[in-house]
Amino acid sequence: MAEAHPVGFRWALKARERGAPLIHVDPRFTRTSAMADVFVAIRAGSDIAFLGGIINYIIAGDRWFRDYVLPYTNASAILNEGYVDADEAGGVFPGLDSQSPRYSQEPGSWGYATTPGSGEIETDPTLEHRRCVFQVLKRHFARYTPDKVAEVCGCRPEDVVKVAELLCRNSGRDRTSAMVYALGWTQHTTGVQMIRAASIIQLLLGNIGRPGGGIMAMRGHWGAVSRARPIFRRCTICSPAIFRSPQQCRSIRR
Image (tube, rainbow, N blue to C red; front, top):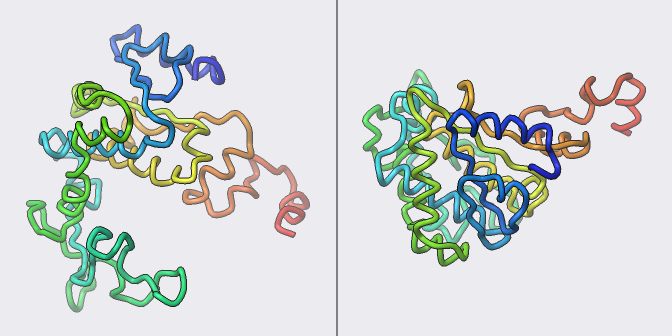
């Protein structure tokens, strides 16, 4: 960030001047690493394991922000009885058609349990139901212990704990933390999963939709932007911010 996005990095340094810890996790030691309070080197491509370790630390240590998670996430929603976790189905999710590489769109192949008649999603505010999203998440990430993460990422177990603890301390009712990523995640073969894992962390800590929080994608050119946000805008490539005229949009569609 310090090298490729020096103007944006200025604000990270401003935050550090006001007491915010600056953490850098990367396979390389760069200028950003030199300016960070904490630098952790990991193997290239092992980001998901490191993020999974943070998720496990937050849940296992009961450090998640309950007053945010309950009203603003789907943690209490109950999955339908046909749901089978990927671990129990040979690495795939329920509804996969064995004759083609597609998932079934039929009702019941995957989804939330609903109340007969009203069709409202069933929830468990106590988060104790075995099929509620929170419990499924908890079971899935329980494997990401500091020792296991260190083995996969090539770092030390205490590095995982240190980063997770700093994020927890700087998040909650009175404070928020922000995550920043660049093309290393966007262009990775499992980039979507990396960004989703980071989103889970920020949601558990209450860092989405609040000042000073969020997940920021450092870009610099329009091509990256159009590929990074298809889930948020179905027609990003034809956004007026990118193409000025209807003729340009039509030429792209063709």
